[in-house]
Length: 170
Image (tube, rainbow, N blue to C red; front, top):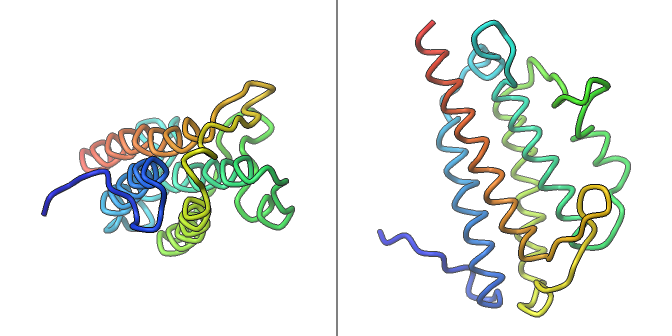
């Protein structure tokens, strides 16, 4: 098998390449967590001071969902915000979740991934140059947003891998 950044055939080339980055990291993340039991999923590291894998999975899904609606230039439906959010809790931390199964977390994330895939099918390479509001008045291009989704996923994979190492060492 040859790995490459080739998107779906019916996507514009650059949109397809960026989607391919997101897809590759999404599948890699799922392979990292696929055999976690509930105890490991909820494990918060030594001294219980880190975000658990469950928290990180929900956080990634919610960030991706925010990007989907940012790119669509639409407000996120209240029902989705309630299901996946909030972004941070009252202490400005990733919200604590515990006891939610890996199957549920991944099924929820799959829904968002499929929404993103559908959006990417609609994007032209010209659309990628459009700017969207990002975090408190900053602006970002759509293509940067897609790159960020892939990069953010990979970033938290490193945290999940560290949690797995600590969990096995206990």
